[in-house]
Image (cartoon, rainbow, N blue to C red; front, side, top):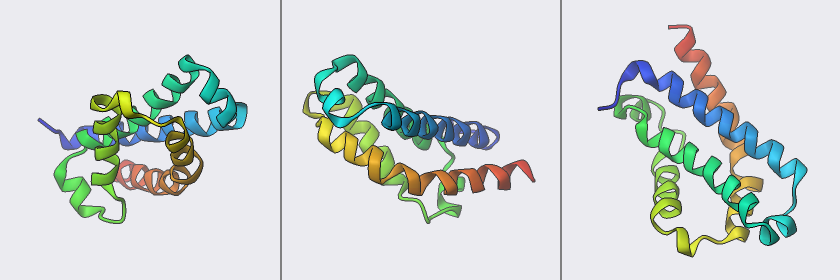
Length: 117
């Protein structure tokens, strides 16, 4: 069961995973990601955390914040967990480089909103 009081915690998990991915991409390269399986799976795990936290957000919260593509994020998590054998390091790197920066300010704003309630 999804609990409204936990929405802020889930958003914090998303924020923390995004920050970890941003730090990781500044320390590593796609070339290294392609060569190092453990590093690759570390990046995968952080993206999975984002997807799982999104999945656990209440429907009420997600519906009241339609500016984020929640279902796309959730779907990516399902692919990473259940379709792990099909994961592309290049696609993962593109996601980390192009998508998470847009998400972070939205998540930070939602955290502020919930903290002020």
